[in-house]
Amino acid sequence: MKSTPVEQLFYEFDETAQILQSELSCTYLDALGETGENFFKAKSCRRKSVKYRRKG
Image (cartoon, rainbow, N blue to C red; front, side, top):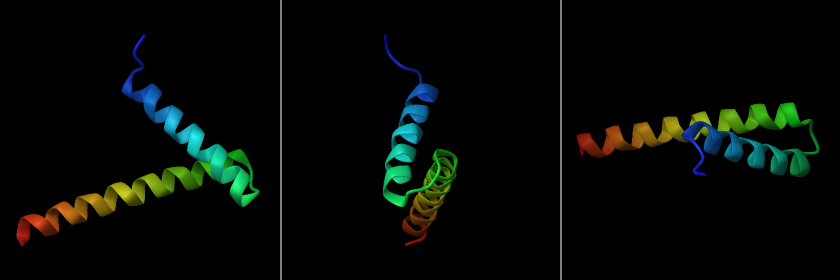
């Protein structure tokens, strides 16, 4: 059975949070927050990059 986009996003967030939790020695919740922040920043940077390329 194919997973939905929401399930895929959850899996990516969960996996990344577990890695950060281990690497940063922090709680899962802190790692999950960091994951969300990193995701948002990366998405924001991609948007700015696309806008820059369109102007150029």
